[in-house]
Image (cartoon, rainbow, N blue to C red; front, side, top):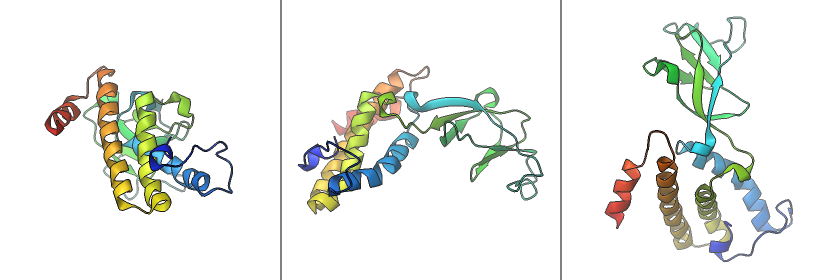
Amino acid sequence: MALTPLGDSRIHDIDDDTGEPAVLCNLYYDTIVDEVLRSHEWNCALWYQSLATLSDDDDDYLLDDYEEYGYQYSLPTDPYCLRPLSIPEHKDADYEIVGRYLLCDLETVVLKYIKRIEDPAQFDSLLVQAIAYRLAAELAMRMTNSKASRDDMLRMYEWQMNRARTIDGLESEEPQIEEYAVRDAKDG
């Protein structure tokens, strides 16, 4: 999908490492997906998980350097935590993210976070289109040698992201659409 707006044909075998389009798509795809997922609280990427605490025996124990906290937790890896959002049961709790760890004063933590999605079938269709335009923007200079083409793809990406965020926000318990709806109204 990312190649079509750049005037290239579709890739029939993404694992074909002989064609530049397939090589470039494989090079950037995972990073772009993670970037777009991190940018919003997508309903399809929300996850809740109890965290495992680290002890002072662990090589990565940080609390000696962060004495204001009593507990250190590893951020989840299955599914992988792309962006911590909150500790819903303790909305006012102070915590700090240091590397792949959460530091706080809570004895138990259930973290709400954005998870990495490896199966594109789990994406909302509007999110798929946004990812495709973001990937197209990344590929544009290499494939078309045109800054204007890249800028066009970035504009399409922003437009598609606004649409996707608005619809995604309407599907949430607590709608998150006000910021995007106001911006869309101003843009015309």
